[in-house]
Length: 240
Image (cartoon, rainbow, N blue to C red; front, side, top):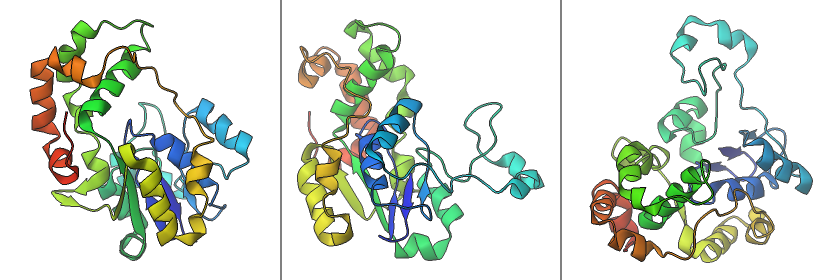
């Protein structure tokens, strides 16, 4: 997550949509007064190498940590202290933390991706952590097991049933949409060119199989995507 006060921008980071690369690129346009949440150690090394603003203003103050109601705050791990802002924070919680004035006055930005491609990317990304040659025959079982993950980006896009994102960057039209954003916010000029120099979380996908090939062999997985991701499919006209 990034909140740029200078550019009046809130970046709500979704999963498996090149969000980390965009997040790092956006941090070039931020300073120490903004909100920037940490990413992985490897990705922070990329940000540092480029000389961009690092994580800042994402923690609660120490005094706040000892208030009784903090026991109900979401945690990022069993023994971690709660954070005021964190990676992939839901839109509902970001709004509550930021307050009505900032939330209503700032542009909410996020990235969306064809849900079939995103599911395939997710499969290879998760599976490659265990093996360099994941067995695609387990694709349907994987998606059934990860149903919550398939729907997880809705927490970044929506509060209840209401879409709260003002500007979507379509993964399939990244350059066009980024340049449109730059035109609307001239202070972000050069953002797309900056992002092309960043390669966070490089692809781990087997390109020998197309998304169409994979889903043709897994009709139940196709049905699952259509059921869970119907909102993106309808709103952005996605197809398999």
